[in-house]
Image 1 (tube, rainbow, N blue to C red):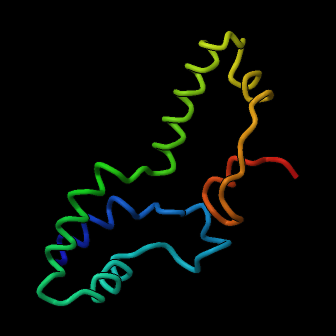
Image 2: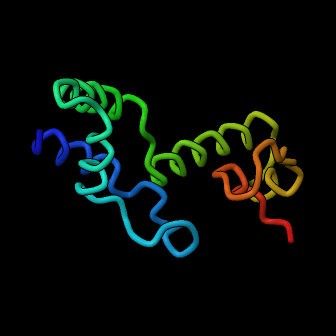
Length: 112
């Protein structure tokens, strides 16, 4: 079980790292994962960890990976909509605020 926890931690150790000063007092550790898994019956813990380890690489997007994906999409939009630069495209782009304060989507909003 410790090996599964270690592998899961390696994938998610950067989760909301940029928010540490605001929302959390510390980074996610292997101990956090251990405490989380302890809520399940002992007989189910290894299965839950194994399933999580199977799903995370297919679904977890680190901040860096997300920025890379978004940056690539903006380059495509710039070209498709015939703007000279991504910055020019973004100046006329409106982002909808569909989430409440403190959620990840609000990171896109740079207005005062």
